[in-house]
Amino acid sequence: MDINTIINNLEAKHPGEKEYLQAVKEVLLSVKDVYNQHPEFEKNKIIERMVEPDRIVTFRVTWLDDNGDVQNNIGYRVQFNNAIGPYKGGIRFHASVNLSILKFLGFEQTFKNALTTLPMGGAKGGSDFSPRGKSDREIMRFCQAFILGLWKNLGPDRDVPAGDIGVGGREVGYMYGMYKRLVNEHTGTFTGKGLDFGGSRIRPEATGFGALYFVQNVLARKGETLEGKTVAISGFGNVAWGAALKANELGAKVVTISGPDGYIYDPDGISGDKIDTMLELRATGEDIVEPYIEKHPNAKFFAGKKPWEQKVDIALPCATQNELNGDDAKQLIANNVQLVAEVSNMGCTPEAIDAFIEHRITYAPGKAVNAGGVATSGLEMSQNAMHLQWSAEEVDQRLHGIMNDIHHQCVKYGEEPDGYINYMKGANIAGFMKVANAMMEQGVC
Ligand code: 2IT
Image (cartoon, rainbow, N blue to C red; front, side):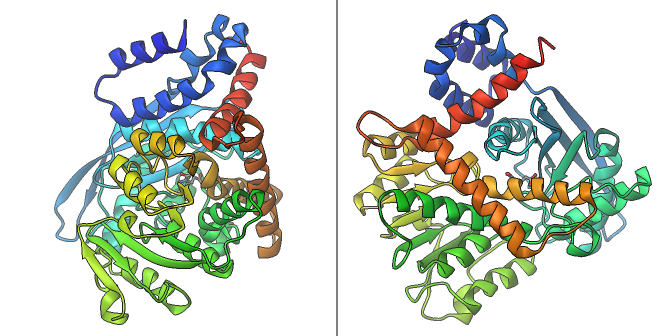
């Protein structure tokens, strides 16, 4: 079956799952040419098998809030594809979570994990539970109830979750604690754990650090560095924090962060202690950035706006899917942006991506740029399996090597006749070929 028919069938079968259909469409359109060169893929229905999750687990999560009232949420785990390794991917707790979003994330994760060069399959999970305004005890009870519904499907060689939006070290700790009680084994079946119980050094920083190593590679090809470049970052979570730290270390000036309430523009640069302000804002549990200006009065807060209206050299979406749309892209292009690298998953809408590619602005997709997070999770799995813990230098060096390799794969498959590197195409083809070949070698099953 040709690619367009597969896409049409999928749209008919899963109407309304817009994020999932968006992610699938992007990958399938990019791999069209290589798919057509491999008739064995069509014969074995590789794509038809690849676009459907292997398994979806849905469960009710019931917990008691601080008033003793009963609360109900929905829990999910989408085990997408384990052709190249155990299911691996984060857990998202956010009011917006639904099956379309988790299927898109699980699908993307499969190709991202393939790009890391490590043996990990793709999965994603989460709940429509909103951590906003919840007490620590409520978070703990929710995490425990979530694991009660999911634990039987997990295991070090079966499925290894981690964090995502709304799930950080604290939540992973609570989930892992309950998981360990239930299975009575300390096998490290979670990554992003605390350093004292099997966590990896550099894991909290890894997504942001890896993204900046990728950006370094992109610039190096053009004979440039990050020194003196201005950078717009969205979000203020763990990913934005790691990206801001490394961007500063490499000589760039970060001028924005953002939250659901709006964005901060700090003309003096968000550096040093100011980066810690991000941690303080998060610790309030309110999910807003406006209080930044109380501590740093030179900065300005723009309510309800996105940072993409500022003139910068580099834009790094670090918040959530589709946070940068066609109009934002036009604004960035008019302001002469040089490079847009998604650190969030599917941060740009298809219209934005089309605009960047049409204007030959370097655009790099999340599945390549943010793969350092899950890659370091893979390194955590290795350390757990070997019952040891590497130094920060060792982990950072491996992470850097992996990001260089991912960049290399993108260039190899993404170079166009005019010399433009289509990083989206490169990442999609490289990831697809690895998963497709692994599925072919394992037979029809
Ligand atoms: O989107 C992602 O790659 C993550 N949330 C991290 C997944 C992981 O297993 O570390």
